[in-house]
Length: 232
Image (cartoon, rainbow, N blue to C red; front, side, top):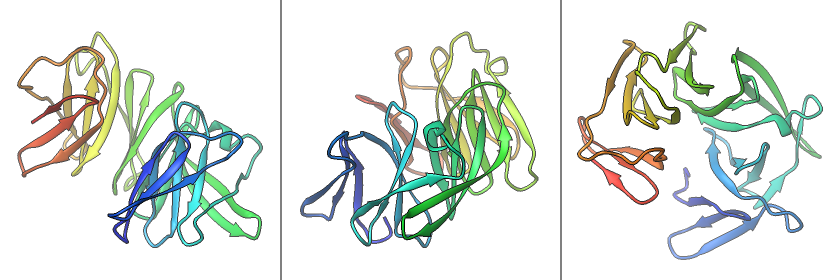
């Protein structure tokens, strides 16, 4: 985070590493939830957390070291959140059929979430990514692409990638969208030019291999990590 702490999602909550020791924060003692994603907004001391393998989200206050109760503006809103991501000072979520921009108000009881729908999908959405100019989500077997500047939507379909299998994962890095597929490997997509190219990998990838992360080494080289392998 901005203070230099490393925050980790665990199978019972989150953990903070300060360089010497870990400090664990359990989400709920009676029913602990695993955390798969941690998001932080600019100029906030809050961490926004996405549950693993179940809908919903949580919020943790770094100042107090406590979880903050959340309520939605409509009944069942929290239970319909399937993924979250943050870009600068904006938090985005996907529900079963839309991408929404989240606003929040804090009161004595906790935090109330309010949502503006920015785009609707054609089928249940999964895996949300965003940067300063673009928001992405997997919509069945195509990628929904939304421009935050001109408020326009377009889709990147499997036909353009000549896919017979599925779109597994997406990641954003340095203005590009990285797409992992079940049978054609990894693609790099530039939303500004609408260019798409398939990456030449040093070895054939196993089918249905899931991304863990993509990191930039130089201006022209990237490392792609999976659960047990790294590719340059």
